[in-house]
Image (tube, rainbow, N blue to C red):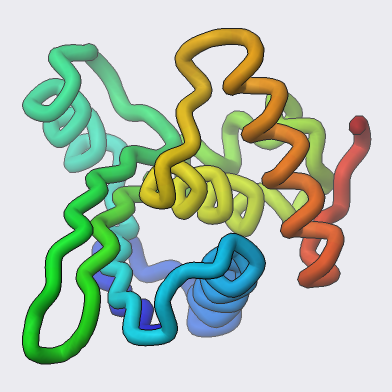
Length: 148
């Protein structure tokens, strides 16, 4: 499994390693192909707001956007792209119910689950996705939850 990161916000190397670790755990736990390729862009608020507007029609920056691709290529299986805005993630930490330091992994796993077909548009899907997210984070030792 290959995870490529474009770090437009200067997030520290340790934090990027932790993001990759959380994504790999989610991919393994969900049985993703070993040749999966995931691309992740870490964006500032302005860049994320523009991407959010262009891709969803919604205004403002959001924490994470997922763009599934599911395409074969010579290098492997392109699962898709994630865009994460660390500034929004850090500001929203309390909303996620995770302690400081666990918010990026929480959002990254959420994005990976979207790439793998999870949907949180209705209550049932949201509950299932939240439960699975926390299970994966517990398994990786990344969960520092204050709830659930």
